[in-house]
Length: 359
Ligand code: DP6
Image 1 (tube, rainbow, N blue to C red):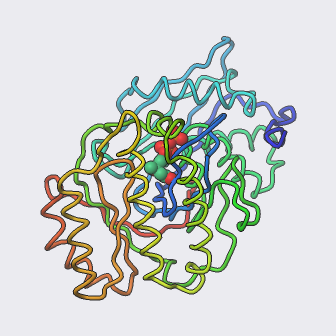
Image 2 (image 1 turned 135 degrees about the vertical axis):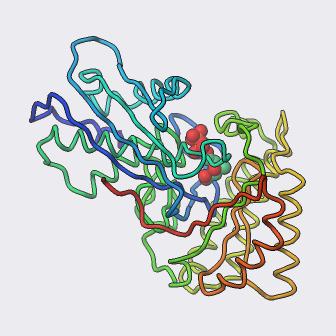
């Protein structure tokens, strides 16, 4: 079993209490993960830009205990957040075999996001990634630092995946692949890897302006969403399309062909929503303002030959992607023409980043 590499040998050091803090970014998928099997394994490979400003900061404090159960409290922005507990219990149950010390400690998990909680931006990727990194810091210390750096990140990504699939793409920058793909060396369903091939300078500081169209609770949880792919009439074609799109992206990422990049990225976003439109039950997660924004981006591109494009997650918000050298012109367009379609005019300026940081 390939997972066996993540089961540690016995601890070499005793540790009574302490704390670790990590800041971990969110990520935005260019080729989307939608559909899973087994224990959090993806039905197709995906690739994402790691973001820079949208992130979660987590401090994990631990102290020894003698009881049999998992014991922890979660705080969001200093306030106890009991609604996060079921997800974390499930996570602890899944990862206990890989982190056998989990029941030996009482944990206090203090977390905060750089983006507003009600922004509709998923915090599960950055949140689960930050928590997995804190747990790995503890494991590394318990092993008396007998752990290679590469293994540390690989296992952190492996654990984060068991919390939330896309979280395994939030450890490193600037591009991360998750899911076995015949053309990507080292790719795995178990963890994310840093994209291993050449990347054109154009993509290294790509901009992502996130337009907050709908800030409410998610209409479809990701678990429900992924399950919709199980008996979906187009499931197999979709998984094939995603893997093909990743193959098409490899030369594009190397030669900086922006028109081709745009075609792939927008097709991915719309295919993701097409899956939701045609599943049973079905969902329309785009709002009228989402469509208005998309149409305006298309018109602007036609009129100006600009290289602006969009992508979407499983919601109504729009990620506007563009190269840094066109920033001034595109940001002017965004502020003037697109921001009026955001809830309370809110948006987040972000760009490609380099991954998680210990604090
Ligand atoms: C549409 O990673 O949130 O953002 O594994 O159930 O936690 P779980 O799902 P999640 O799904 C993300 C789906 C997506 C596309 C993507 O990020 O690849």
